[in-house]
Length: 282
Image 1 (tube, rainbow, N blue to C red):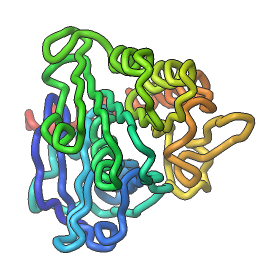
Image 2: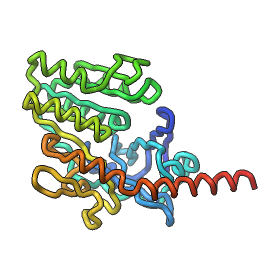
Image 3: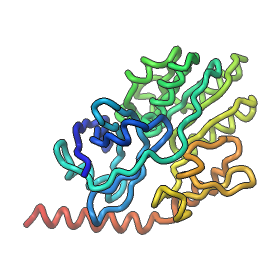
Image 4: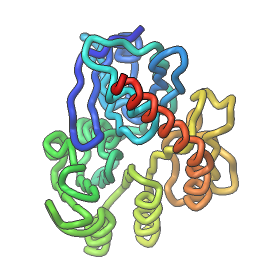
C-alpha cells in the first residue's frame, strides 16, 4: 500500500498528489511514469512523474479527473489514504544534455510532465524558453514553477483570459521565424497540440521531442495497447517511449487510437456516477 502524503487542487478537476513510494522516488527521472491502481477492482492508470523526493520518499503526480478511476481518486482518496499499487519508474527517461537554447512547450495537463524536463534542462546549463497554455486561466497551473526554471517565458490562453490570446504554437513560430538559434524543442500536451507544434518546427528543421499519451494498460509492452507508428516502425509508448521524434510520429493514427475505447470509458463513468449518487441518497 502506498500512502497519500499530500493532496492539492490545482484547477477544476486537476489534483496534485504526493504519494509515499520510496523505491520509485529514489530512481525516478524526468520523462518517466508510473502505473497506479487504487484497489483490487481498479484499473491501471499511467501517470507521469512530476517530481521525486529521494530523501522523503514522496513522488509527485498531477491527475486530471476525466474518467471513472481518476474521478474516484479525486472524490474518495485523500491525505492518509493509500492506493494499492504503484509500479515504476517505467518508460525511458528524457535525454537531458547541454544542447544550447531549447524551447519547452506545455499544453493543458502537459504542463505537469514538462516541468521536470525544463528544470533538468536548466540545471544542465541550457537556456530555456518556456511556453505554457490552456483553454482558460482556471486550467493553467505550475506557472510559478515554470517561470523559476525558464530564462524566457510565455503564457497563452485560448480565450485570452490570461497571458496572450492564442495557442502555444503562436510564440513558437514567432521565435523560430525571428531566426533565433534553437537547438531542440519539447512539446507535451494534447495530441493535436503536439502535431501542430511538430509541424511548425519541421518547417525550421528543429529537432522536436513529444511525449505520447496513447492507450496504455500494463506498462511493460506485453499488451500492445499503446502501440504507435513512428517513421516506418511500430513502437510501444510504454517501453520505447513515451518520448519520440515529433517529426516522425503518425499523429492521425495516435488520435484515432485514443478514441477506441471512448464508449466503454463513458459507460464506466456513468455507472460509477450512478452508484455514487445512489450511495449518497441512501
